[in-house]
Length: 249
Image (cartoon, rainbow, N blue to C red; front, side, top):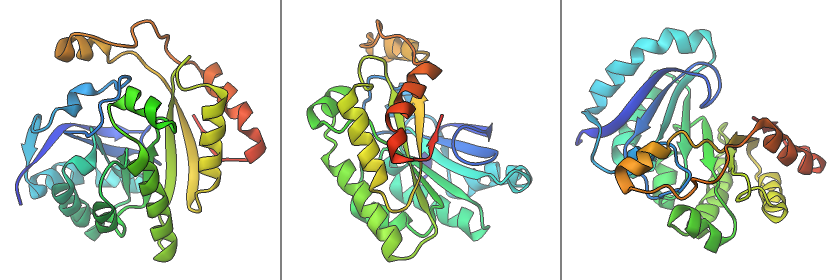
């Protein structure tokens, strides 16, 4: 097994899954979201290299904190599926120690990769960007057709195998871009039809990462877009109230 590339590790995370968690940001991502605040994780084969054993030994030191606070490990990025074989071996090693694992993913990967992880992930946190394929491509430089198919595939597999894992949908509310009524309605219906749905997590757009864009690409396309606010999220929540979804923010 080759070494994996890790951008950074957050040892006491509270925003990426239940409880106190160690969040591992793996390097590489198939999308190039124009609102990404960690765009430097997008570049493959960068960051610090670890063997599976080295990474495990580094993070297992925090196990007592997870156990006391109903936490665990969150596999994030970038995109964990950008290094599927490496991250899978790491997930297996964690699960051998009965550690709660969250997969934070855009789910742009193969169905084969999804199947290989099914028995090791306790909570899938899937970031949905848009439903209109043209707009999704403008936002991410990639189609969304396989992503939406993969969510359905994952949901069906969880039910078919009677697994205890659940799906949380994450959505970034960008003022004037991803907060229009038709998109809100589609997002609500999408969540409502997920059998193993845990929650919809609304995240406000945040421009703090724009300096990374200037450093790497020399431009930032959302320069004139304001940061999202709690009021923006509450507007979203009100428009979805009739569906009685579990909404977090």
